[in-house]
Image (cartoon, rainbow, N blue to C red; front, side):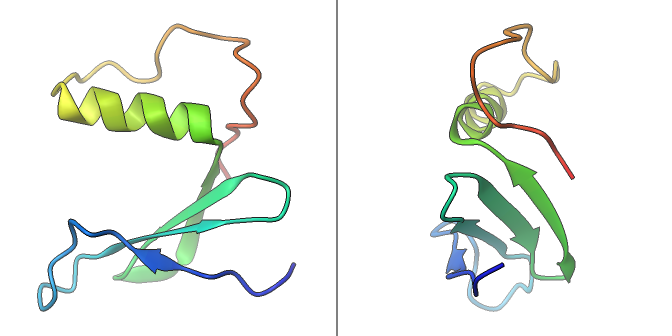
Length: 77
Protein backbone atom coordinates (compact mmCIF):
# COMPACT_ATOMS: atom_id res chain seq x y z
CA UNK A 1 0.00 0.00 0.00
CA UNK A 2 1.34 3.47 -0.81
CA UNK A 3 2.21 5.89 1.96
CA UNK A 4 -0.98 7.55 3.20
CA UNK A 5 -1.28 11.32 3.64
CA UNK A 6 -2.91 11.57 7.08
CA UNK A 7 -4.83 14.76 7.87
CA UNK A 8 -5.61 15.81 11.42
CA UNK A 9 -9.22 16.71 12.15
CA UNK A 10 -9.77 20.43 12.56
CA UNK A 11 -11.78 19.57 15.70
CA UNK A 12 -8.80 17.88 17.36
CA UNK A 13 -7.06 19.95 20.00
CA UNK A 14 -3.40 20.87 19.80
CA UNK A 15 -2.24 19.60 23.19
CA UNK A 16 -4.84 17.04 24.30
CA UNK A 17 -3.34 13.99 22.59
CA UNK A 18 -6.82 12.87 21.49
CA UNK A 19 -6.59 13.56 17.79
CA UNK A 20 -8.44 11.89 14.92
CA UNK A 21 -6.67 11.48 11.59
CA UNK A 22 -8.19 10.69 8.18
CA UNK A 23 -6.52 9.45 4.98
CA UNK A 24 -7.94 8.59 1.56
CA UNK A 25 -6.56 5.69 -0.46
CA UNK A 26 -6.22 5.52 -4.25
CA UNK A 27 -9.25 3.17 -4.44
CA UNK A 28 -11.49 5.72 -2.68
CA UNK A 29 -11.75 4.08 0.73
CA UNK A 30 -11.03 6.09 3.84
CA UNK A 31 -8.84 5.27 6.81
CA UNK A 32 -9.37 6.64 10.32
CA UNK A 33 -7.04 6.42 13.28
CA UNK A 34 -6.72 7.97 16.73
CA UNK A 35 -3.46 9.48 17.97
CA UNK A 36 -3.33 7.27 21.09
CA UNK A 37 -3.45 4.08 18.97
CA UNK A 38 -2.04 4.95 15.52
CA UNK A 39 -1.64 1.31 14.48
CA UNK A 40 -5.38 0.64 14.93
CA UNK A 41 -6.93 1.80 11.68
CA UNK A 42 -10.60 1.71 10.69
CA UNK A 43 -11.43 1.34 7.00
CA UNK A 44 -14.68 2.80 5.68
CA UNK A 45 -16.22 4.52 2.71
CA UNK A 46 -17.44 8.08 2.27
CA UNK A 47 -21.14 7.22 2.56
CA UNK A 48 -20.79 5.29 5.82
CA UNK A 49 -18.49 7.95 7.27
CA UNK A 50 -21.13 10.52 6.38
CA UNK A 51 -23.78 8.44 8.19
CA UNK A 52 -21.56 8.26 11.27
CA UNK A 53 -20.85 11.99 11.28
CA UNK A 54 -24.55 12.86 10.90
CA UNK A 55 -25.47 10.42 13.68
CA UNK A 56 -22.87 11.90 16.03
CA UNK A 57 -23.99 15.43 15.23
CA UNK A 58 -27.61 14.44 15.87
CA UNK A 59 -26.56 12.65 19.10
CA UNK A 60 -28.14 9.38 17.99
CA UNK A 61 -27.02 6.12 19.52
CA UNK A 62 -28.36 3.78 16.81
CA UNK A 63 -25.56 2.49 14.61
CA UNK A 64 -25.35 1.37 11.87
CA UNK A 65 -28.16 3.03 9.93
CA UNK A 66 -30.71 0.72 8.31
CA UNK A 67 -29.72 1.70 4.77
CA UNK A 68 -28.13 -1.49 3.47
CA UNK A 69 -26.96 -1.80 -0.11
CA UNK A 70 -26.14 1.83 -0.68
CA UNK A 71 -23.08 1.03 -2.81
CA UNK A 72 -20.49 2.17 -0.28
CA UNK A 73 -17.34 0.15 0.33
CA UNK A 74 -17.82 0.59 4.07
CA UNK A 75 -16.44 -2.61 5.50
CA UNK A 76 -14.70 -2.02 8.80
CA UNK A 77 -11.42 -3.75 9.46
